[in-house]
Amino acid sequence: MMEDNRIIRGREAQRMIVETAWEMAEAVRATLGPKGMDMMLVDRMGNQVLTNDGASIIKALETRDPIAKIIAEVAKSQEQNAFDGTTTCIILLGELLRRALELIERGAHPNAIIKGFRIGLEQALQAAFENAIKKEPYEAGKEAASTAITGKSAEAFLDVLADICARAAIIARPSEIKLLTVPGNPKDSHLVEGLVVLKAPMTQGMPEVSEGNILLLESELGPPQAQMTLNDPDKIAQVVDMQTKYMQEILSRIKENNVKTLFCQRGVDSRAAQWLRKEGILAFKNIKRSDMMRLAVATKGHIISDPADINGEDLGQGIATVHESVNPYVSVQGEEVEAASIIIPAPTEQSAEEFQRALEDAVGVAHLCVKEPLVVHGAGTIQAQMYSAIKNGKPASNAKVEAARLAFAEALLVIPQTLAESAGMDVMDVTVRLSNEPTLGVDVHEMKLVPMSVFEPLGVVRSALTSAVENGVSLLRTHSVIMAKPIQEIFADAEK
Ligand code: ADP
Ligand code: MG
Image (cartoon, rainbow, N blue to C red):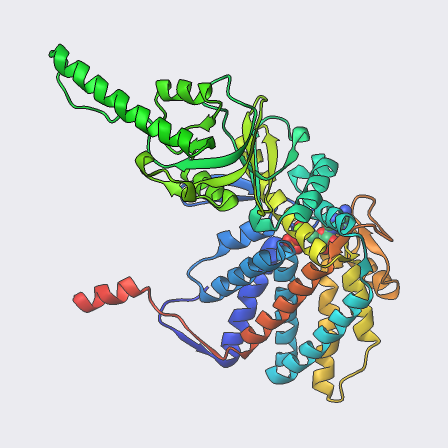
């Protein structure tokens, strides 16, 4: 990697950029696909985690090296836009740059290469669109979610989870789908319409379903704490009297405002809890701030900081339903708000995190499919199809541009090649057969090339390829790299 305070220009800069991109692509190659291998990430504190999630590995490689940073940004934006295809995108980027450098060393100008890549991209995207299959949104979502989950630990529960993701994606946008992990067995995962808070009512005997006004209270619900010495009986009686009056006033305000459900961010006094129960109000205490905020959005209510301020306008609206189980929770369905929650029981904290990550991706791709229910054949097929379309496509008139266009086509095959490699298949053999029969895919378990029913959203393939090309192009245009010291060090020098 680079030293500080150096200006690197021209061919040397290009070589360095390509080397970094290639190193990062190499680092994630082994994780691609269902036979992808786990890698162990160890941080400076000695914490370690096993993962085969390309995006996490790329994030871990992000160092002070500016090029590594750019590549990590590419991975992040792929994840944000398409929820999946991160590893694919980085592998393609590395391969495109490697081939570009080869052409540069053989005398091609970067502009000619950029032109050839852009023509190739257009022809590839056209081919992807023509080869896409239209499905029912639920079916497309389920297929895509299945592919996203395959190869991760969540795969053992593929059917349950893919169905949940597809249904959730139909109900709500990914930002409104909350994943909650609880202790237990993943096979009991389920989808709840509305928002879920992992809390049981504050006492027994409260209603199980309650519909109407919802009060969101930030402060404690209990008498104000008096500071007194406990040796003056009169004073104590006086204080208790005052506290009782105060509570009566607050509670009658709650009743006047016809509150049916109460969520309190802090504690609730036990007498107040009993009173709420008697009034048939469903109430919860010690609610996390983040849940309070979500409740406010979903029920269109405001969080009130002082119980004395309760008024009708601040109340939310909705139906709260209590679910008794090992991990009790309350679901809240607000008016007009389309929210969904997925409850994922997981045996350990680490598996909970893995499941959460896997499902985030899966919900995301299911969402893409619900929006645009077009899927393409995965397992390397779509890349073979794009390759073949470019090979048979209109050639460019300039020889160097044409060489780049063909190099682009060949670069696409890195995906089936990597899948084949991870399965221990003969890469050369796979390349030759796939280029002749681009409807086949890599069956990594049987180690054969066969038509595969693995589907990915067209959107993921389109985004991974476009972003690999666009970022590759801007890196190819980069003519010099200046390594600056960290700003703090520059200041430290000035003070000396
Ligand atoms: P990414 O971060 O790019 O999504 P993955 O590790 O999820 O990386 O691998 C995705 C690749 O694995 C895609 O090319 C996809 O088509 C392929 N793939 C997924 N499931 C299978 C399968 N059952 N058999 C072969 N290839 C598969
Ligand atoms: Mg994936």
